[in-house]
Image 1: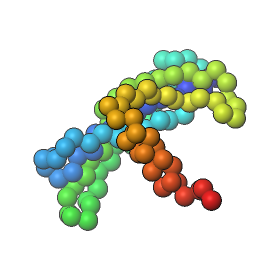
Image 2: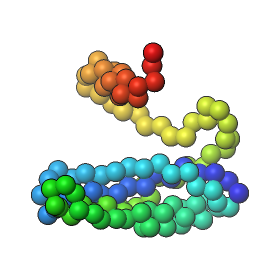
Image 3: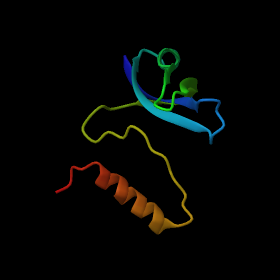
Length: 111
């Protein structure tokens, strides 16, 4: 068996959907014998995690599974193993760096 990281994409639709499109990207760890089996397992997880509920504004919120957008084999599972990367181009590097520091501070684990 091998380990894979799958990116599952869901669309989030609130009420009638007259809002900016929202997508939830989830990284899932998959254990499978082959890449095809990993893809099928990831797709099954996506379909089984579709959901809908009523929010506090009494609107139906739907989580609609779109697809498995990425699938990457992990060659080594150990401390510090890279699971995912994304290269982000920013017009304002200082703003992006400030955003990264802000997100880190929200984790609340710094002294």
